[in-house]
Image 1 (cartoon, one colour):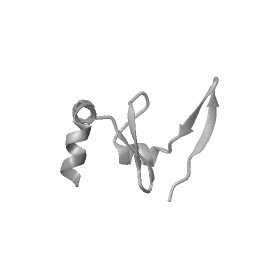
Image 2: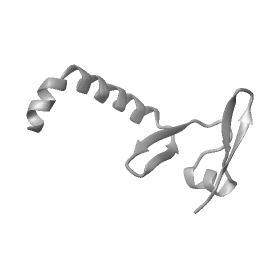
Image 3: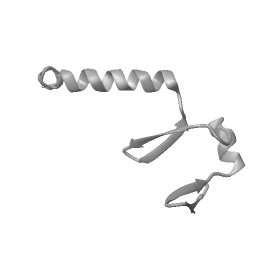
Length: 74
């Protein structure tokens, strides 16, 4: 288990990620991360533009077809 520290950055807050975590995530300073809420908490992963676009499309489809999807789930 690794711990991180929350620091103040102006009116916001930021996390200090150790070098080892950056290497595991395959990111470096200035990169963008995706935060996903899971049943176990929050998950950090490297930002994937293609995956992000796919999720936007999926969310749009689910929103537009909510009633149909609900009936299919029954």
